[in-house]
Image (cartoon, rainbow, N blue to C red; front, side, top):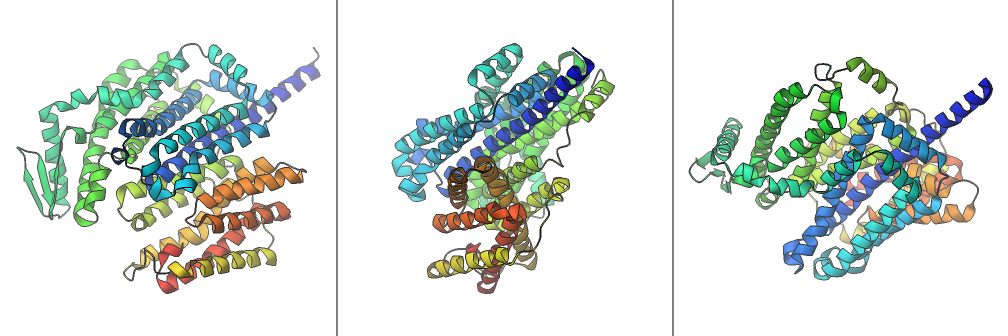
Length: 543
């Protein structure tokens, strides 16, 4: 082989790896986004109560699947970050595989199947039709998962890659799938009365320094704040945090092996992580009690054991691992680790990553706010802060967008707003009408509605979904892509038909050479006009 032949081969391998890494990040991001869509649809919109359905065991089992899949994706992502040889072999194999638009369509079809019960039975009828709902959710999830895998490479290639990883990865994935079971198995550890008593004392102390009027009974572990009475029992001692920190740190130690100083890791960092998890849980309980006393008692009690707590403890465990991974004190060869990290491609300037990650954060913020506030709109400042932070993170990518003002974009946005407002007139007095919203809340609500949400939604629905499905040059494929992406966009809104029409118009602007900036501008104009009417009528349900 000549020198030129060798350089050409190396260049082709590099291009395949870059292409594979981008496709992998996109599919993983899409999988997380779809999981959050299903969780929001059936936890918040439909508000399924398993114990009232007559199929408690089946319902709770299916509900736990979402948490298991999130754990699976988290562990897989952790493995690929830590084991660079496995990551490079995977992205190279993906890059050598031709793109499969039919697999992406299969993935989206699975998502639609999982959401069919909402259209058939309505949010209020899901509990009465729980059996067909569970069947469709499972079927849709299986179809979506198969489509996601095939969108990257054939199943045979997946099996070959798994064989090359040895036994470590399958073991890690099995641990991820049984994380909820590990949590339940570790519950006896928390039945130590002294530990519950210390948690009780610390929660009481935090409530007292907050200025609340607190009554407590240490013998029965009862706390009352302004008439709101709760018991601090064993489940409130932070079993989720303890189990997740232990499991993730165990996986990290297994994957890193000899690269970390095990004695320092287990004797110093592990106890510190458990203490941090416990402290976090104490603060969480105190906040929930204050929410129950001052905002919404029923919602606060439900919040003790919500999946939002599981999500937050997972994030906490990953932050601990991030600190460990960057700590020279814990690493045996910190210079090699720094060199490997420096070789990673920049994420902030990646437009495809910027199209997916902000949408995931937006969906996650909705789940967190709904778990904390009985009236989710009251937590909108928190959502605005999270959406602003993630857009600033990807600012280098967003600066690549170029826009030339076009009257048609503004006119399209105004037309959408006019129809939306007129069609909403009959229920202009429904929910969320208030005179006592403070100025700060109004400002952040307008910022989120007019600026942040249009950017994030257009990045995902038009910049990613529509662009990936439409391809180039095939009109029929573009029309089908427009219909599918618009339907998914409509599902994000209370008024499905109006949302789908709006999504179709935004998509048409995108396809008609206006590009992503045209869709964003039209979306901003529409939301700005609707927000003006909402502000004038004090009916925030419009947006």
